[in-house]
Length: 178
Image 1 (tube, rainbow, N blue to C red):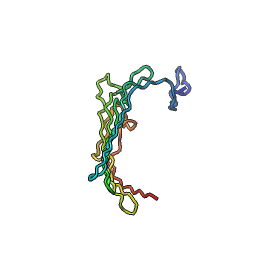
Image 2: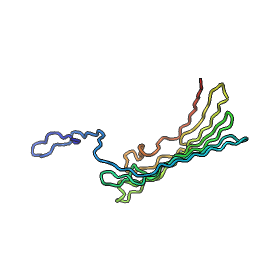
Image 3: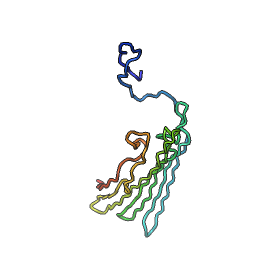
Image 4: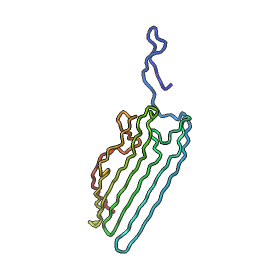
């Protein structure tokens, strides 16, 4: 079984818990309903270069597991999306990636525990590719150093399975084509 107990002590009918088997198991069917949406736009100009924009979003309208509706609840925000705007002209390029994770209710919502707030993360970068067939990219993940939303249900107070928890992180990347 999942719960393994020690032998009961004298006078007890049930022993103490020795350990719990926490292996993942498919113990119940789950049903998802929702929408995946995507849109891209590209505009080339003669004088200003190429402009691109894209948005990819997922809306979870229903997630039923073990008879419970979980969409919008703990670990299952209604909306998640990513957006990107980019520009390129000659050897130069720049882009901004945006991530959005919708708020979601606490599993203890009945006790007036507030929901985990929505999260926005912005990741800009700039590239130059005119240096000995090498592209140099400088960027930062989470440029505004936004802290992850506080999840009151988690012992760490953040939920890395749902939210982006990485603080601001600067990077330099060199790419060379052979």
